[in-house]
Length: 388
Image (cartoon, rainbow, N blue to C red; front, top):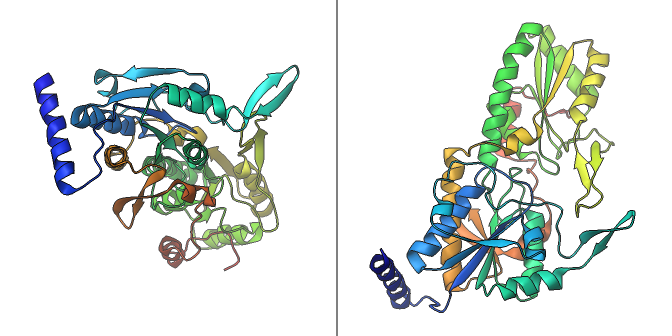
């Protein structure tokens, strides 16, 4: 086994040198962390990065536990081949994660108050003490925005985009999205029959704080009659009119798919909770219940609301997400070997490429109002809650 591994390392080095690439044989160790909300496919990425790093280049792989929390408090462990075997199909992350641990704004309890401190120097020092040649950060805009700052403070970074919301700038798609859409679509399929049986308006609330990708794709795939997304403020009167139109046409039920970040014309999003110690303290949720009460009052139709919430984050990733995660993880190792730091791997026009980490800081990537799927849905009679 050792001789075989050595041969693979020599072959890889020879091929890079022959092709003129910047192969750096002095690299010995890399580390990975997963930050932000969990989603299906993270373990597939960890597996791809670790296995390729070990088998093809003989690199040592360190797992940082619980995202930036582990980097701040120096919690990590060495990952062996067996640690990353058999995890392709498992949801979540074997390393753990945190969406409240920002080294540049870290919540500290002092007496009865929570204050925020900059502990980034400690995080950078811990990363450097590990002697790593690169830190692979797997996450969304929050995780990768922090990674961009760490890069400027001397930590070599390669970013991998992860979010079920599919709303990151710089990439056409993120792993986890396909699984979330599949779960939401199955839920809509199941709700459809009970809506039809009881002649109800059924509202399915899905995740999507700032962009309506999940609601749009799952709504279309599940045959939603009304799809409400953050990008298109809705009119309760327009929604009620659609329900009445369907009833007049003999359809005594309606399916409404709504993103948690959807809001009425001239109104605001519904805030469910404020997490004081979080770098992003606002938690949305509950817009489906408010809409249901309004619709029941206006239309007289019995209404029920189902919030899918964290169901969309859990479980085994789809085949598409497993493949995408594997491709992104393998690409990350190539970038590390070539010294292409400070960049996020991206999918652009169907090709795997990379963009500067700063690209992610440009804000969320909303659904374009001229997106062809919106046009296709409208052509089939789907309402987006606006007055068109």
